[in-house]
Length: 73
Image (cartoon, rainbow, N blue to C red; front, side):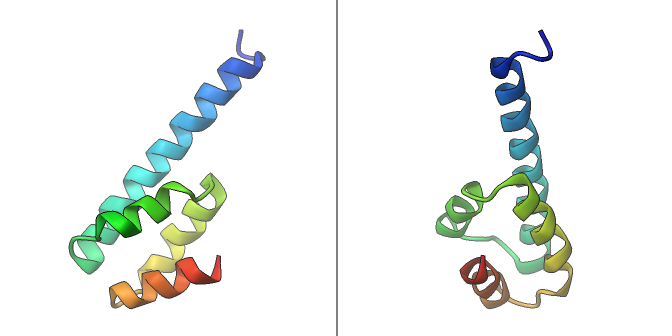
């Protein structure tokens, strides 16, 4: 069961959703309410990109920093 493609796909999507939720909460706490447009852009990021963003956001001081980071990805 755990080796099936369907199981792995569901597991991967769950991990991506958890990472997205955590990064979104961190961004909202650091920068204030992040717009729905930016959250939609975040939804397109892979787990690895969300992890990198989780580290990078520690240096963000404005939404412009987030926008710039997303543009570079």
